[in-house]
Length: 260
Image (cartoon, rainbow, N blue to C red):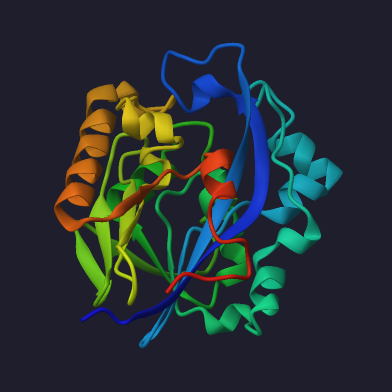
């Protein structure tokens, strides 16, 4: 029986960029406004966050913004993130503090998913061991070393496992070496599978299009992960959620409403 009690999608910022970053080899000249999301899961055995968004200081401090985002690696500039969108302020709307989160599960360590770790350094942090290895290389420019080099309580993982009954980690590599998705069994209604960046947009799922950035150009690996998630969704009756689709996000319960 699932231990999940409530589930919240949380908007932590947005990023405007060319669509080809989400849909490999298509979308040139088309710009999209992508939501940057975290997801809070309340269970009978504590609280879990899937992803933590960006580092607020790197966006809002002019010197850090210039260093990290105003360069050739980021032709579309930095994301947008307000003070109100910081996770500590979102959690406060629910009557919570950062210390009320027990586990942070990072689907992968790119800047828009692991940048907020320094604000959650008390928690046990789960990441795939292949993901950490790729991040430390770094495998691409979307890894910012100081996002994940702090004094954190790391729990390195490999394979698929249940964090608690009703919350399952699913391997979905391709976008990055150790990308992980998550299946959440709600007490009411169908389960939800968070694709993470295995599928930015609904188009990635429907048409089985790889993300624009693939680890070591492993496009087939990325597409195989999409197919895998679709098969799991079909077998379990789950909803498969894309991660950076603004139209999909607008259909979700507005925060602070929750799913149960």
